[in-house]
Image (cartoon, rainbow, N blue to C red; front, side, top):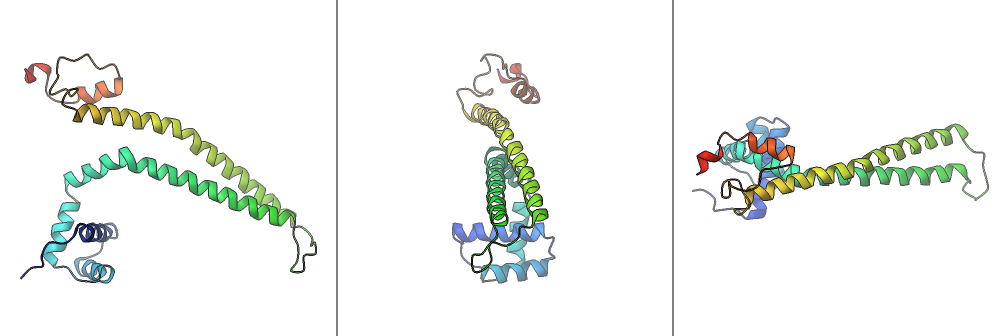
Length: 190
């Protein structure tokens, strides 16, 4: 007799573990061992393959692509900016310690100028990278706005092409190309 339905949290964890198995290209036996070790209980071969099929389906991929283009990319970019800023802060603190070296008793010791120069170069490169990442933020915001606008048009019955085919022509070239890619015409909708 099979196990009853799992909680939403358990399903999320199991889907993540099966996704890891796909990513790491584990064979069935290795995957089931990994899931049992990480989840704390085993799942059947059938349950594993059903979850794997669902995770690799076109619908699942489209959900992920939709999420990533609207949210995930922004989160990833934000994390990159934060990580680079943290690296810069750490390098500046380390440089300060190198420029004012003291021994355990607090007495000054000779400076390591070669290492100081390397830290300064590293700080310059990190600042340049942080500036480049910062320049991308307005572009990402503009792309996100276009995606959100396209998403709201496609999911709003009042403004969607399907429900309101006599609306004004699309002026945005990106959205126009998107709508032109559909195989139906306005006459098909009447």
